[in-house]
Length: 482
Image (cartoon, rainbow, N blue to C red; front, side, top):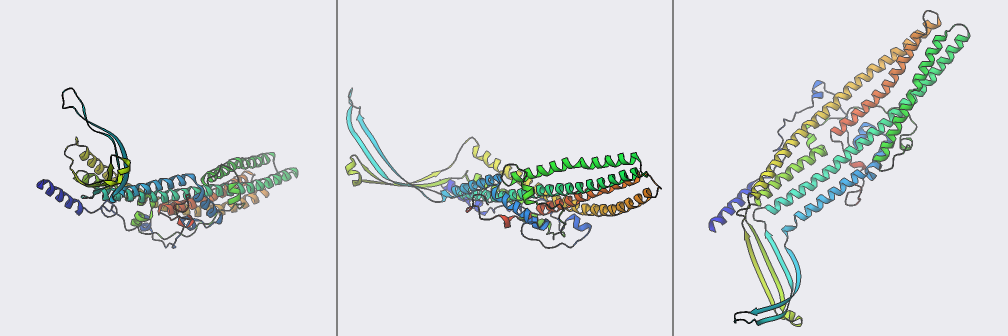
């Protein structure tokens, strides 16, 4: 027994010296760059940004209203919040063994004791009822930190669930932003298409007037009519895309699909918001503490580390104390005349269990190693997402500039082609080609401007943009808000 106690104390000392794992310092096997690759290609001055990420992308009151409704009414977010509450309840339950358990119980026994030592006879020794009433207390001493490690694991798991809520909020606000941009883009394209239809109708009337005056051709009229109908054919698709964006926004804000969300919220405007200046970029390592998905994975690594400690400690002896103070009598009227007091210390040492405890410890270590690998991979993916968004936006801005220059040249080309046609130096086909080219460039320019705004939103979300300013009350105060 002395050897066993000595071994147990040594094991406890070893367990006490093991420092909890910090996934940022101990678990990250990836070399963290000092700057992003896009910055190394060409430094740029960014503007500071704070608060909700979508404010740094587009400052629009209607978008703010949509996001607020989503964070207040979205059912997926509410389900995640309930998962968080379950995790918090589990964490409280995991810490319960630190305190003694106190129960009060009572019993009534119908007791018959007979002596059968006499040959062929049963002699009653005692019979009747036995009444018992009293409290009992039990408490396990956490000698090797098993309970402490299990509580830490549950508490860290609850923190990870809270980070999951913030990650889902970031995802949902991104979905609202994307759907809102879809509505804005298709409304702008629809307004542009209607403007182009009006332009083509004017050109068609001009062709018909020239033909009536003897200076035009029937072919030029047919060519212009085809261009007009081609432009009109764009409208159903644009309206359908706008309606689907509206349906998606409805579902995101917790309502049945309807076509009035984008009309009420986006409004009648058809212009695309301008792209603001690029925000200031923090060091890449800041993603580990800014991005809620990485925070959640880091917390789960720490939780699994403590689960390993609990699984190891489960192989060591357990010491528990049990005490009771009972009133006992054979007659209910005499119940409080006699008391029985007990205090028992129990020391349990697992000797053989078919290797179950050892296998559980090995399983916990493997799960921890897998979580660490996932954590490293997620950090690499996060770095790539930032780099991708920076690249898409930078090249998109360059493409937007090229489209603007082409559009300027195309409009000048229309003017020259019309002059040549009016002077009889050319047929109508160069005019038609120039108009078609300009109208295509106008649509491409709208689409590219929206694409640049979409890339900006992706960048800010990849950087772990905050959503707290639109959150409202805390989860404990409002069931719909974390």
